[in-house]
Image (cartoon, rainbow, N blue to C red; front, side, top):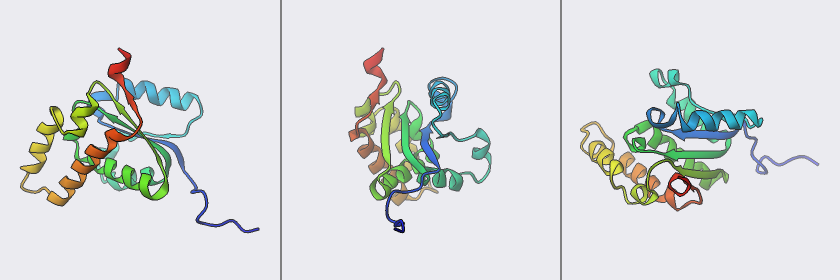
Length: 160
């Protein structure tokens, strides 16, 4: 019997890690990535070199090729347009490809993410006042940030 192309997707990665490098790369993400790899979990983590070139399309492809995405919200997450673009793609893959999404709130209150408060509000003020910004895209980022905290996830404040 021939297999249907509409059945189970063929995933290239088990996990895609979405995070703000300056906040977590050398701490939380470094430990998480090491633990995943040591347990033979095929994990995509962006290389810092991708940021210097045209790496966004590679990241968006990796998201689509992943079974699960872990989104690590941190203090400066919303200041990164790359993180926000990735988040929009992740939620689209969740809706369209049934990708599993796990949010982690690393030293940030989930309500600050959902309500766009604190550092998230400050970052969005900058995005909204950027004369080169695409306001429709900024609205997609805002909607994604308001939606993601409603998913079942992990809040580091509960484990201190």
